[in-house]
Image 1 (cartoon, rainbow, N blue to C red):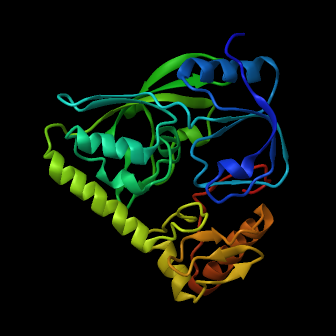
Image 2 (image 1 turned 60 degrees about the horizontal axis):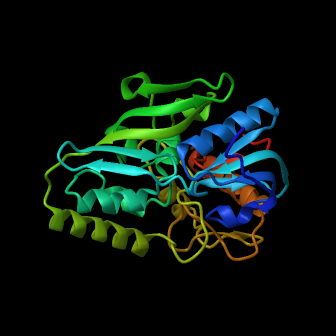
Length: 296
């Protein structure tokens, strides 16, 4: 099988935004869809477990030796924008801030909010990531996927995907996103779009702890409430376990003060859940994806 390149015993903490994780037995960063597909096929034919990392945000990897193949998609950067139609084709590994700025420069409206999300297109669709009521699913037309069990490659239309709040079927099934086709409103005012995008990023930086390693938001917002508000009302900002701390800037962020390990962070997540359930009667659900744990 051609185009199979991987490294061994790679430190995964270098590939997560919270800077925590063990070692990957095999690790690869494909540069295009063909290399990516070949890696999926290699793991299938060699009976290797296959783990996918995008930008490594919203991801907690246990401090263990992770057997099998870990694929990081961040070098899959193909993106094609048609300014007249608003049609965008993007590899799974395209970073959202990169796409957001390119959309604005091409006069496409509707992607300005994505500038502050440190994830990839594939990861954002899989997790149905968003900001408030906005999500990338709103702009999705179709996705190209590969089935890790049958190795069949197919295209799925948006109407055939059951998106829910911070959830897509790709979290549970055997389908891995290769590329996405999206639509944004064309013929917008480029100057205004660039200004809005810039303001959105500035607002994120001012209200969220961008100066320290974190996941992004830890918990999904419960119905008619906000996870950060509930945590802050219990006076938990600044609460620490080991090197993991609830951000003093935003209650729904856990930051790594240089020495946190995966146990510190998981313990802190658990304590937050217990305290909010005990005091508020609300069960907070993590939106962080976990690899190498029995939880959940």
